[in-house]
Structure formats: structure tokens, C-alpha cells
Image (cartoon, rainbow, N blue to C red; front, side, top):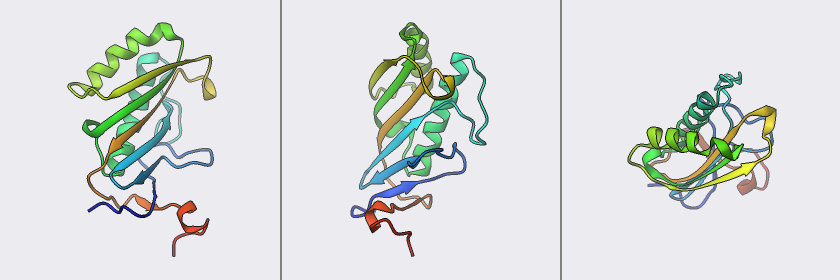
Amino acid sequence: MVNMSTPLSVQTADAPTPTGHYCQAAAHGDLVFVSGQLPVRPDGGESDRSFEAQVRQALSNLFTILRAAGSSPEQVLKVTVFLVGIERWPIFNQLFGEIFGAVRPARSVVPVPHLHDGYLIEIEAIAIRTAERENTTPSKASMGGQDSP
């Protein structure tokens, strides 16, 4: 049974560590909200700068965090994509369909002028989760800013 009372922060070493004041994902009840994922390798290094490689790396990070939160790509409800250069939409759409396969979540593609460190794509998602994972901890905000005991 999934904990319904306390928001949880999700953290896995298998995806890039956030560089700002946010978590990789937040889970509450049966939902997980994955923060925007740039195409950064889990070790923090840059991925290949080609657009296709960036899409694949950002989605790999997203899928890794979903699994750490007790979810999966098949349980994604909504994806928001921030895309530099709307002319890349057809390539992105083809790759998205190839990677997600039969899964067709709701999706928004938002054209933006630029992203952090010159990346071309950032992807966030909302998904259903069916299991609590050991990679989740109560958020500090839910505990009045205090670390868990």
C-alpha cells in the first residue's frame, strides 16, 4: 500500500543529482511528479550534443526516476517537454513514439528560446505509482523543514 499522508522526495544515484533546490521527483499517494530532466548523464557529465542523443538521455533519466519512485513508463499520465527550436518537433515526436511504444500519455510540447547549459530538451512527467520504494524519504517541507529522524 502506498503512503497517502506524507509527501516523499525521490532520489536515485542512477539519475543526475539536482543542482538546484529541488528533488528528482516528489511522490504523494498514488502519484509521482518527476522534475524536468535535462540530457545529463547520471554521473553529471554531458551527453552527446546531438538532438537524438539528448532526447534519449533525458527520457532515460525520466524512466530511471520513475522506477525509483515505484512507477514505470507504462504508468505515465502526462509529459511536458520544453524544446529549443520547434522545427525539431517532428524528430522529437518520432523518437518519443519509438521509445514510448504503445504507451500514449497526454503531452505538451512547449517551444522555448533556450535551456540551461545550452541543452535542447527538458522533459518532466506525472505518473501513477503502484509501490513505495526505498528511494523515497519524507520531504523536509512535510516535516516543518527538519530532517527525518
